[in-house]
Structure formats: C-alpha cells, structure tokens
Image 1: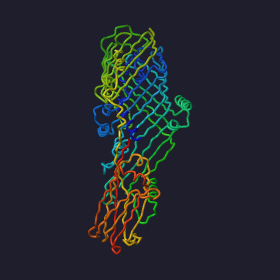
Image 2 (image 1 turned 180 degrees about the vertical axis):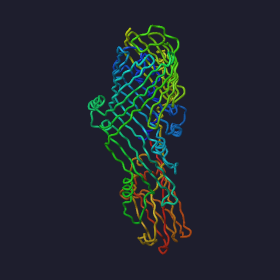
Image 3 (image 1 turned 30 degrees about the vertical axis):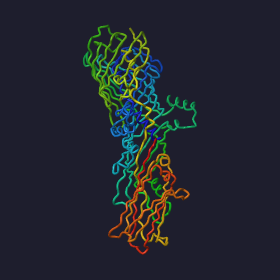
Image 4 (image 1 turned 90 degrees about the vertical axis):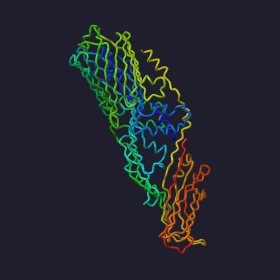
Length: 464
Length: 171
C-alpha cells in the first residue's frame, strides 16, 4: 500500500505547466476561447457555435520538481536511491498540478451595437498538490535518523475538484479604443476535496532528564480534509447506473452550487499598441451536500509505558486511552466554502505589417489592424500558499484570411524553456485549432516538467 | 505549422525510462520508539525464592499485531539501559509472549551490583534479525522479571529505560 502511494505520488510529480495558463489562446481574437480568458477581448467574428464536446479540449499537467526521467531512467542504478535523492531535492514549495477542461456547449453572437454575448457550459477538473515534504520523508525514511527534528504536517496541502461551469457573458464596445466585458458563472460541483492550513508537528527527542530514552511529541496537530461527493464515489453498494445518475444530477445544478465572475478589458493607447487584462474565477462554492470532513487534532507526548510492579496489567489500554483522549479523530458533516483559484492575465503588445483590407464595421475595430503582433503576457493564479506566476513573450502572425499562428516562449515555476505553438484555420464557416506548449520536450516526454494541449472545432460566422 | 504541431504530438514519446522498475520500489523506513520503563524499589520485590527476591510485571504491546509489523517488519533492535543502585547483583529476564503466554523470545541481562554513590549502568542491545523476526510477529506481550540476589540489600533502586529500532521493508 505504501509503495502504491509513493508510486502514485512520484508518477504525478513526474508529469509535466502552470496548468491553467493558456498563453497560446490569450489575445487570440480569431477564437471564441479567448473570451474565456478575457471577457473584454476583441473578437474577429460575429457569431460562433461550438460543436458540443469538441469546441475546446484542454489537458495540462505540471510538476515544479522532478520529472519521470529523474525517477525511472535506465542507468543501471537503483530506483530507490533515485527516489531518495528526489525526496531530498524537492521542497514543501514544490507542487504538481493537473487541469482539464471540456467545453460541452458554447455559443456567441454580436448585436447591432457591436456588443458580443456568450453563453456556454464547460466541465473542469483541477487538482493542485504541494509536495508533502516532511510527511513523505517520515514515511520513506522513518524518524530514527531524525531525532530532535520536527516533521511538519503543514507541508500537506491540496485541492481537487470536478465541476461544471454555466456561464453567460458580454463584451461591451465602449469606444474604438476600449472594450470591457464581464462573465457571470454558476459552478455546479460534482466532487471536491481540499486540505489546507493544516498544522502540527511530530518530533522525537532524546530525553536525558526524562524517565525513558526518548520522548515523542505530537504538538498542535490539526489536520482537516474536507470532501464533497467522496462518500458516493466510495459507496461500494452503488451501481454504475446510480453513480452515473448522481454524477449527471450534480453536474447539472443538482449538487453543490457556487457563483463566480470574470472581468477584463482591452485598451488601445494607440493603433499599434494594445493593453489587455483580466481577472477570472472570482468566485466561491458552498459545499453543503454529500459533505464529509475528516479531522485529526490534539496534543500528545509520551515516554512509553511505565511498569509499576505490579500495576494494573492494563498498561496498554491506559496508554491507548490516553492517546485517544488527546489525539482525536472525527468524521463530521460540516458544510464548508471553497474559493476558486483566481487567475490574473495582463498583456502589452505591438502590431506591425498593416492589414489594409476593409474593416467590418459591425465589429469594434475602428482602427488600423495588423497582420503581426509581438507581445508580452503576465499570468498569475492564486493557490493555497500564494500566487504562482508565468511570463510569456509571443509572436502572433496572420498568414491570410484562413490561416493564423502564434508562437510563445514562457518562463514559469517549471522551466525557462517552454516553447508553445498555436495554429488555427478557418475554412468557410468551419474553424479548427490546435495548441501545444513545451514542444522542446515532446521528443521525450519523460524529461518534461510540464505539458499542455488545447484543441477544438467550431462554427464561426461573419457578417460581411 | 499544424502538421508540425500534429507531428510533434504524434511522435512524442517517453524514452530512456523503464516503468517496470516500480516492482523494485521498496520503502524502508526505520522507526525509533520508546518502549517500557520503570523505577523498581525494594517493596516491589514480592516473590521470595532460593535465588533471592523477585519482581514481575508485564504489559501488552498491541501494535505488534498490526499489519505493518506482521507483513513488513524485517529487523528489530531492542535497547535496554539498566541503572542499578542496589548493592546487589541482579538478573533481569525480558520475555516476548504470544497471546497464550507462550515464550517467543527471551533476553537475559545480568546487572552487577551498584551503590547509591556509584550506580552500575548496563546498556544492552538485542538484535532480532530477519531469520528471527517471526518471534516478534508472534508476540503480543512483554514481561519483565527482575531477581535481586541479595534480599538484604534493600537500599537503592533499579531503573530501566528502553527503546526499539524497527526496520521495515514495504514492497
């Protein structure tokens, strides 16, 4: 069991992005998905209709620490030595993250006043786990060689959720230099688990002044794991049909509900310069249904078992009772609130090589347009212990009315060698796009700290 | 460019790694834990025999029945530190017992006479290796029997402090 736990931990740590950063799609006005990243973005079409389940498929995973090659490489050495080295290399700030999104339905249209409205549903899975350094070292090596050292349980922190997002937004044409937009979201929770703000240490000390050789401490321990929907997943009596019915009910507003807001703008200080920014998922979920909380808390110290010659002969029971009295575990059903990981995007870009084709006056583009854009983007996402950042430089080129591409270079917590590529094609009303980053690692994904791909197909219409 | 991206995605692979090595993963934590301790004085030697006066006690150690001991323990080191201020030679017998009180392993420690001014300190370590470890797995109790061979040496005490190192291999 312990080995399986470690294998899964290592495997997940071995996968490889700042999982919610979609630097390739940001500021890409040929795709409606750019509106999901900035509701104040300009768009270069007048209506879109996503093919259900196909308009956006997004997968990404990242590890700030080790990769698969670090653990599983074929070099004739011992995998156990490599695991041990990796355990000591990783810190409590290292993390792994997985994010997946699937657009179920998406539609958008522009009104006569150049405002663009969007509506849709997408499903999302998001998991973020900090490397639990001290608990991992304790489990892997034990306390024998760490007498006098604290093993800190606050190292353990994670969030994981599966939800459906129902959204409705609009982008307002304020002037030829400024667009802004908002998107309201209703979150429909399918599953949630989180454990953050844990406290407590385990320590073993030499006790020269004490009655025994060691003294063990569990100090200020308070470990809380909140779950919603977990009990159903682990209900062995539930049939697949029942699980699916429950899943669908929760996916379509029959489970835990939350509210959120996206906001953003696009501003042109001049024809060639564009400034954009957005805040996404300013929102929360109230977890009230199918909730289980597992709490372990208390303070305890022990020197072992004292024999009293003759004692009660129930020394063990007394020791165990004392332990249970001081270190308690409880399963509760208390509702709790989770906050969505707020994302921030900002960019500045410069357009060149003017596109002299006549503009479409229904769209908010009453200024010079350019085939090429060179820009920089900043991204941040709020995680349990603070913000994670990424910075991207990009070159966006429109080849003609049908083909367009974008290349990015991103520096983030994982690497300084993340090259990404996006390509989109519009053939009649049909639009298809494919984006992937960390291309340098695609020749051997085992050495990748991260990887991400987005693709989709949709119908797009223009009033010409 | 799309073709390039698609080609990259399709030809990307995982190389130079061997996932079958998961079979070789062994977690080998080493746990250091307190065991029993006592401070034994004259009044607690209640059994009289030809070899002296004897004190006896025992306790269950229920954790010895847990899965991680039964399946994954490969070695155990037991360290006992006796401090004797009785002016008498003592013999301590520590037994590991099964639920039906069958003796699984015995440790005998001879403790020289000491005095209140100059205690006699004996530090004894018993190593239970992999070939013997089933003795511990079959045990659930530990008993201590201390015989003071000079019943008239009533002043002083015998202190015991102990610890165990448990070596595991989780496969």
